[in-house]
Image (cartoon, rainbow, N blue to C red; front, top):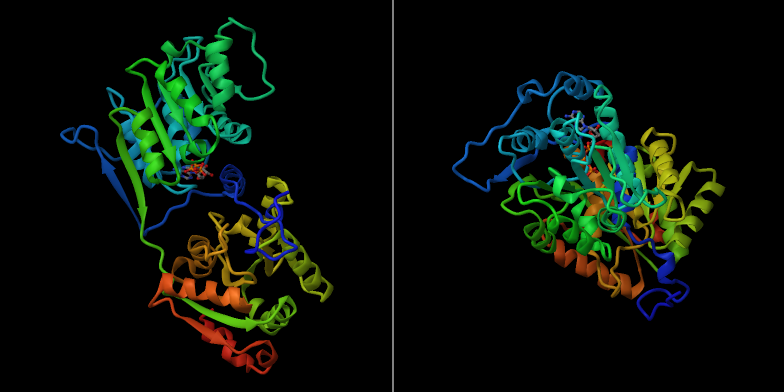
Length: 456
Ligand SMILES: Nc1ncnc2c1ncn2[C@@H]1O[C@H](COP(=O)(O)OP(=O)(O)OP(=O)(O)O)[C@@H](O)[C@H]1O
């Protein structure tokens, strides 16, 4: 255990601060997802490897001229028409000659479904050898992808899927008959080079999914490159990612030659429709008091309360429960499945208030949240304001043009400094308004927080 130095309260350790594990966050999103994320406020940016070739986009799955069994599979999943990214990606993926692709869009926009469809449509079921490879960062994510392929391919009985994940054994030198193999980079590389159950020269489609998570994981980047290098030049290569930082772009350029690039760009998130307040407190107990004063307001709709550590989150939720409130607790102590269950209950309105740590700050859509409370302000490892996390946390209160409301609890000088950093970073028009301190907070006329004023 690393005992912190100065920036964090003495009784806190880094172990107790939930770090967001991107692979887990992605899995959680998959477990929670019901439908494709479609947002009017996105636009598609396409950079073609050959700018002179015509660019097609499809509005229906029929236009793709898929095999009947496959089309049946697509409809059996409840897909009526291609998602935004699929409209452009699918024609490119299924073109003759096939194009290489680097695609970036947020989680849930239909990337997995797009490449699953592409794989299923290019395999030749009569050839009993591996033709498509897909690598994913974790065992669980590989299984999730496999489920999509197996579901979509349910009417193509001759197409088989194998999983190159820990625990699955293969016999050295005996070639696999499954046309599609999904796995994690290490095991897949072993299967290809050490056990020689896959002939990389016979692969016609290679997919790197969740590339942003992949390059963050020790060893995966190099293992992926090693697999890619052994492929034929005319093997179709695809890379998918939810984010697009410079490091990802460098990696993409290395592994996907002559790529067409599709990016789904969202409008900049603004905090214009979110009213931000702060309450000055001297200690945790005063924060709690301030929270009680707000409580009636929190439960008008639904609220998320963010704490820095697991200890604070469980302390707070226990106290609130003791007081008879219905509160859900979400922290990194829980397994991904347990987290999914907690979020699902909250989404369904079983609880009005969710107490959590950073595990919930990104990516998880809970639409009806109107109020976010930063019981602890978000800070980075150096103890400075973590602006990204601030934006992610409070941004969820004002989704879909609705009015949101955020309250920051400010404890002592350190927090005041952090609050100033936040104010400076988001400058005008993200002005924070002050609320009276805890002792006077009680006196606030509840009508000043009335639902009409908050725009619910
Ligand atoms: N064309 C479509 N019509 C309706 N639903 C769709 C369509 N394409 C995908 N979906 C559904 O939307 C959800 C998200 O799709 P998918 O998993 O492919 O997204 P993703 O971009 O790969 O997300 P992640 O990066 O988190 O894996 C899934 O539940 C999937 O079944």
